[in-house]
Length: 233
Length: 349
View (cartoon, one colour):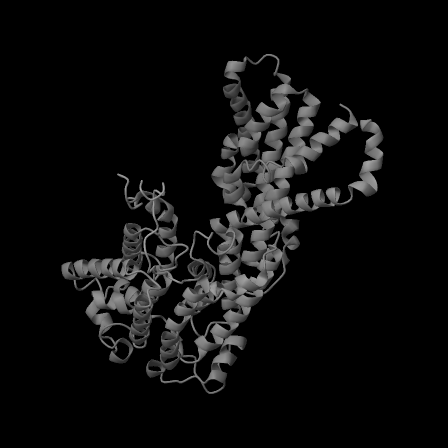
């Protein structure tokens, strides 16, 4: 795998083809559990691990899978990975596991994972598939944490509340109380807040893209044109 | 085909022309809401006037900022008065003595998320004022349900300074006990019935609060809204199907249930004259952008709101259900319009 290919895969996963902001996949867990940053982080990590494991396994067996039955086979692999994660979280992060509840087993049906298995891992070598799983998973995780943080801040005025559930008792002090104002915007913690928050994040991404494109088109004569013209000719 | 091949010769004069513009319609609505505003001030004090000023300033700033950000010409859109109507509608819905940030947040949400993000006036599927109200009610339930009591009930009259101090600092001026706000009549009835009382018990609990029919002050404000609404009907600013469909359905349902079990269901007049019934009937559900547009559709739309308001008031979790009823029926407007298209002259259906 060349460095260029590596950069391309990472860029696709984190930004250009971000599964949460561009593909809009995995909306159900994303909207349901992101009422604070730690919940988002917990589900994000679980999804990330499942994604890497399933991508590697699917890529390993890609030559031996008959096309007609590939989907059940992928789902079998994903379900196995999810079951392992589910049991590990139940054992070591019992409270967080309880909070995330049904959304851990439901990672099986998360379209991000099946989508990457089908679109990438089943057509690419193992190492690239692993990197793809990692990049896509981190891209998804970042959105979960940012969305959770936004909603937590608006609804409770805190950040990283209940960090001890994920990082142990020492993390209890990590919680930031940014305001003592009791008037949180309750709506942010409710389902409409999740939709509004995600909409705002998608809009911000689009806005950044548009700005970048405008800047590229604004100065073609100054920089781009002279260097490109000889190549064309 | 004798008319030189002109298939549709123009009809002769005189033509009647509706001469309506967004600005004119909005101005009529604003005129019609002056009477309710005065009645409201008379019974509930100056709080609403302070809130209205706050709301107007917020509205202007938000409109200017959003139009500027969207790259739209500011002046024509700012002067068409549509934001003023949203602002006025929302102001009537929030408690007069609520903290200043409540109306500021509500107006900003209504205009930004209810109107501009959908593409501005004419493209918003949901009534912006009701969206702002629903947002406030769900987000800040405590602040939204403490209504100023009419001075005849609380025994206190707040001066305009008192109201401003309460709105901006949250504290009552020295010498006033904290008894100037309380639950609304609709809230009272809901809690009373929930605690096992009968409608008769609750309504006759205190003659000063209840007037025997609905809440003191609330009746007068509702009648003022009705008079304002009749003015709008007379100037043909709104169509008759909205108030008739909505009020008729609400009264009919209330009458049916009250006849079956008078102890547990409030009489029709109570429903017609309390809460935001008349405000909704003539000023809210008549919004030309978000309401159904065909004649039959208007009736269906208004009747749907009537049913939902009664259901939410009687069996729902919130004391008044107008905002949620309007928003729910807004969702059905495209469907209603689709299936109630009138027959075009000259074509079979």
